[in-house]
Structure formats: C-alpha cells, structure tokens
Length: 150
Image (cartoon, rainbow, N blue to C red; front, side, top):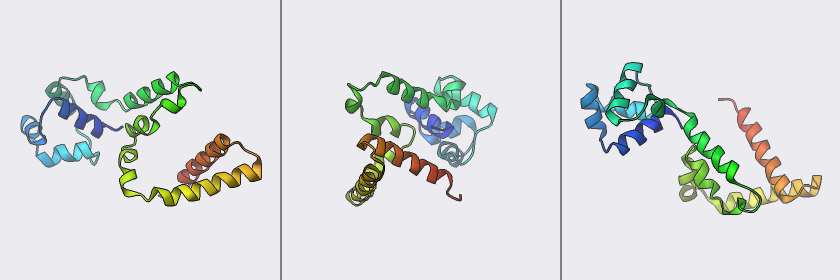
C-alpha cells in the first residue's frame, strides 16, 4: 500500500469527499485526486493537516508497512492445518488491488491450462511435488519480473 491508498482509506473513514478535503486545505480537488492516485505526494505540512482532518496519526497516513504487517500476521497464524482455509487472494489484494479485479477481466481458464502444463513439466523433469513445482514456478515468475526492462 502506498500513501495514496492510505489517504483514500482515511478520507472515506472520515466520510469526506475529495471536494470537502480540498476546500479545507485550500487546494483543488484534482490535487487531492493526484495524491490519492500516487501521482504526487503532499508536503509535510499538508500531511499534518490531513492527519488532523481525518483524525488519524501521521504514521497512519504515511506507513507503507501497515498492510505488510497485516499480511505477516496472517502468515504467522497459518499452519499446515488451516492453510487451505485462508483466502490468500483477499489477504494479498490489500497490498495488490489487481488481485480483487483480475478475475473479471482475464481468461483464467486459458492461463490455468498453460500453468498446469508448466507445473507438470517441472514435476516430470525434476521430480518435484506439485507444491514444490508451484513454488519454483512462482519464483521463476518473480525473477523474470525483476529482469523485465522497465
């Protein structure tokens, strides 16, 4: 989560519109929108005023680790007995919102077949269990993502 998401959450909890916050800060609604979208970041003085308006601490607005702590807490409470009861999509979508929406946009069956073939190949070629093959594939995807020219 970034500061923009924290700003949106705090504003909504305070039951305020972007226009109302903009008026209180003497900025435009577009400025509030840019902060919330993460396109720009409010100054330290504006962050202090936002914390006052939303009745939250400055840390609550700027802390990127809040969601990661929640995820860590879920991981720490998870064991082999309850791992399948955990809705990991819901847990991780707090940090990565696309996980909430992609299922309505992506042809999942197409990719499931391709992924299943990759998993089977890893299992056959290297003798991995299904779980180990999935973890290896996930790691390969992560390494590939890091090496993509951005």
